[in-house]
Image (cartoon, rainbow, N blue to C red; front, side, top):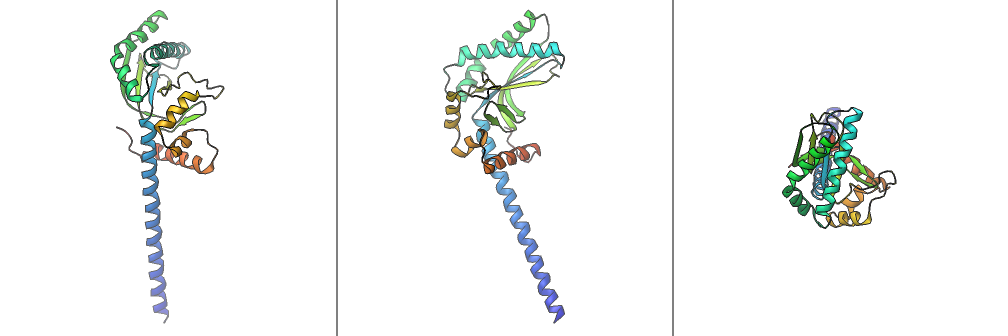
Length: 221
């Protein structure tokens, strides 16, 4: 009798263990699938600017910001009427040489002779805050500008929707930029990147961050 009971208990424990493993696997797969889809949708809606300084010296960091300002000013003149990410990328692509020339001119005018590399690609970005908009870590299409050895601290912004002019101190993003983001994303995805106080939304955002940081998402193009 005891042997029979132990066999039954053993089978129950085994079945319970299998059910737990299956449940965990289902939750993990669902979480990764959800995070991959959301991360991809968010990345597909924006085009970013990435400027790398020659070094972390105060002079090189200041130069980085001057190059940034020159490029953003030029971007504003050629793409202010653009209404989509694809349109901005097309405009930037056709003016890539001009971006390089402007960067070089700014560097020269400030007394330096660094080389500049300007390219469009799909790059890894950390989580970044732009006023009251938060973009999770992941791979994003971007215009990358490398100054000199490009070993200094980076600077990021979003070229589309236009968030490069956001006053981060005030934490205010132009309503026009928000409306553009809302059109590109569904309601939940937009809630994820806005400063939403919902614990559920915050948990999902942290989930995406964690999966990106542990390389469990393969969102790179």
